[in-house]
Length: 45
Image (cartoon, rainbow, N blue to C red; front, side):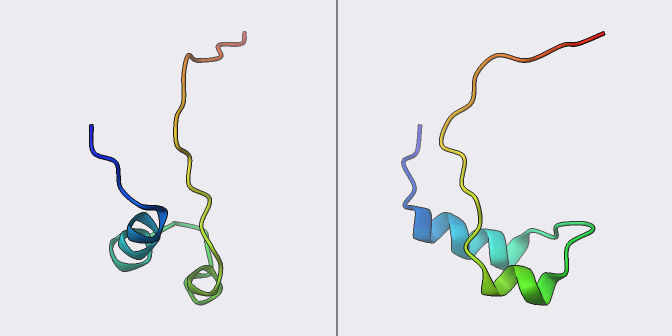
């Protein structure tokens, strides 16, 4: 698994990812939320 620095992930996010329903000008001024790890799932009926 690659261990990327948060700064690199932020740069790639701002350079390559379009976040629908987000004002991109405002998004570029802010620090993104970087999720390091996830696990499991939640299923509700």
